[in-house]
Structure formats: C-alpha cells, structure tokens
Image 1 (tube, helix red, strand yellow):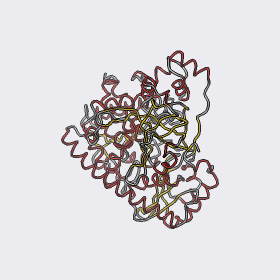
Image 2 (cartoon, helix red, strand yellow; image 1 turned 135 degrees about the horizontal axis):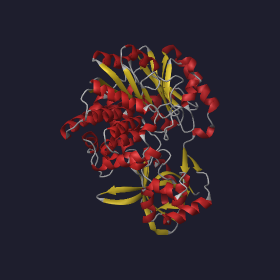
Image 3 (cartoon, rainbow, N blue to C red; image 1 turned 90 degrees about the horizontal axis):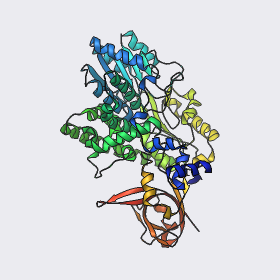
Image 4 (tube, rainbow, N blue to C red; image 1 turned 30 degrees about the vertical axis):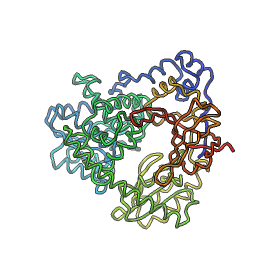
Length: 567
C-alpha cells in the first residue's frame, strides 16, 4: 500500500487550539486537519446539537411541497410515497410514510422492482398510482432526472414532489416541488444530505406547521442515521448532527425492525461502522434478492413479533446474497487470470448468468484484489447491464461519459455507477473503456493509499487521549477514524496468523524497549506480513485505535492497516 502523510497544518492554529481547549498537540492537529480552527467550531464538533440544524424552509421549493401536501390532506387525496430499493431509498420511504400516517391514513408506499423496473421513478409506479386513484407522488432518493416520467404523470392528473440528493441534469422535472440542495439556485446551506436526510427536512417542515418540535422527531433519526451510514455521505455539518442523535436512538430505543436486526449481534453499542457493515447489507439484501418492499415492511413494523419474523426472512435473503457474491467473485477472478488481464488498467468482466442484484458488490470485491476501476456485466433482458466501481481519485462517471457512443444509458457519480449497453457493443465498449482509463488514470492511483493523520508514540495513547478521540465519532467520509504511524514497533512474541486460511494477523505489540505500553493488535488481510514481524523484528505500523470487547472486558486495540519491516 502507498503511505501518504496529510498536509502540514498551521502551527499557530494548532497551538491556539491546544491552549483554548486544554488538549495535547496531536488532538489539536487532528482538529485543524478537519478544518476546525476556533473554540466555537470545536464546541460544535464535540457537542453536536439539534439546534444546529438549519431551517428546512431555506431549501428551495420547501414551502411549495408543504402547501401541496396540506392541500392533499384537506381534499382527502391519496398519497403515494415512492423510493429506491437501496438502504437510502427504503429508509426514506419508511420515514415519510410512517410520519404521514401518524395523522393522515391515505398514504401508500411503492418500491420499484430492481429487475422489472430498474432504478428510480418508473412508469409502472405511476400506473400503479393512477390505477389506485392516487393524485400525489412523493419521491425520495430519486426523481431529479425523471423529466419524462413527471410529464407522463401530469398527463394522468398526478402531481410530483421530488426529494433527491443526486446531481440534477440540464433540465429539472416539472414537478410541484423539487427538493434537492444540489440545484444551482438552491440556497440551502448544507449540500451533502442523503435522500433520507432530504426526506427528514420535509418532515421537519411539516412538523413545524403542526406545532411539533425537533424533539418530537428524534424517534425517526434511527432511520436517518442508517441511511447516512449506508450511503457513505460526509459526516459533517447536519449529517454529523443527525448521525450523532440517530446513533443515540439506535443504541437506546430503536424501532422494532432495527432492533430485530441488531439482536443477532452480541454487543451493547453500535457505531456508524456497524451500521455500514452489519445492518445496511441486510436491508439492501431485500432489494437485491427479492424485493425492497421487505425492507420497508421491516422498518415500519409496529410489534416486536412482526419485526422479528420479517428480520429473519431478510437474514435468509442476506445469506443467499452472500452465497451469490462469493461464487461470482471467485468466477470473476478466475476469468481475469485466465484471460491474462491482470496487467490492464481497468477490470471489465461479463457472464450472462451472474445475478444482477450482487454485481455491484462483486465489483467492489474485485477492487480489493486488483485495485482498478471495475465493471461487472450480466445479461438483462435483451441488453447487458453493469455495475461500476472506482478507486480513489478516479472519476468513473466521467470515464463512462467518454464511452457514451457505446452506451444506451448510464448514471451515478464519481465512485459508483450503473449502465446498460447492447449485447453486440460489449467488446467495443470494453476496449474503449480500457483505453480511456489507461490514458487518464495516474499510476499512483492504481496502488491503494493510506492517509496518515499523525506520527505518535505509544506513550501518547493515554486514557484522556482516547477519551477525546472517541468524541470525534461518528466517523465517516471527511471525518474518518484517525490513522497513526508509529516507529520501532515489535511483537512481544505471541504473534500469529489467524482466520480460516491464516489471512489475518494477531499480535501484542510494544514500542522499543518500553514494556509498559503494550497493545493487542489485529491486522485484517495482513497474514502474509507475518514474516516481517516474527521473531520480534522491529517494524513501522500504521493503525487506528479502537475498543475491543471480549468476555465482558473492554480494552484498547490497534487495528493495523499496514506495516513495513525496519530491515
């Protein structure tokens, strides 16, 4: 892996924060790296407050959205809440529908079928609304590019309110209201809300007109925090506040559906990372293998018994999903080796029999091995569909744009996208995509990067240091768990390879001759580095610090990201 140090920060600012906050230099440095340079900013960072949430009516069209919903309720209109089949979409639908149904019964939900309808607003969904005499559709986590769909709905007497967070196209749909802070003419102060976050701002606006306060909406924040974690949006600004309070709900009194999923794990406290790796894949599995309706049902169940039954079904779907993606990953890796494509700057593979619901996961798995911009294709009716995943600093959306002559349609963002092509275009597209990547990617970006926040000694890891470090949570994009570098580290003699195939490394490490500061350490997928540290050889490690709970005891543990022998 490629180790890089974060840029040097201003020493005067670091020293100022040390003095006004009463913290050591490393903590002050970490804050400045996160653009926190004043006492007030530090106070906001360490003490997130619901009072820091922005007025929802600052968002363009919020007044129009609220007015149209109020008119619908006054007239007794039927409302359809429409969302995507992933975690952000299903949590959004659960949030909006469950809130509206607390005071208005004429609300239904709709999640498109991943295979029959595809991503986003569908004509089938609009027909469903028309057939059931629904005259208002509220979309969540989709709709910003659904120009023709909104036009079609209008011809049937159906209005749209769009709640989305994706980049708008050149033409914005002619909806009653379009809530998306990424619109050029939207003055909303925070631009990085996920779809569920935008939905929450609409709920907040509706609630304010009903005499409710933000405290009345706290029970819904478990859904918002789950979406923030799953959708990998920056944990800054409003997202940080919403995630912070959402985690409090998740760890104290979550809704029955989320509690049912958490009950499968023997731990008392869950972090954003737990949401990303333990909860989100299960919610996603519903839409990948069966239907996103299962996820909405789970997240809106009112009784523990119903929630548990639905959660058990979803757990089985997730097991099926894992089986599919493991099998397909092995097949894809063999295909790359057999075709001698390991030297390519990109990875593009295709098998008509691969399950469409897991090809995005498989693309991510292939990046773990080859670290290349990756596309995984499968058959989709008369066409081929692919999921695309990228590596850090490479815009895969732009790369696809450069191949547009081969594409029927595509969409996404810098690091993930989806596309459709004609079957006969596959070879031409694959060659063109490799050409585009080879001509635009920098060689250094084909090697995984570890960004190091600070160089420290084990003696710096005091109780106070870690107590303050914990207050940096919740971690996520633009506020990742700090990564430290320490020299002259050696195993105390108990190191070993662990895991089914010895793929991981478990150590107890010390620095230099100091035996007072010893730490348990785990290095996932670093089993092959055992030779570099066996027999008490010194090395340099990069790692993050975490808590490890075992047999009722909690202790600090180092999670080693990489190591280099001192030899």
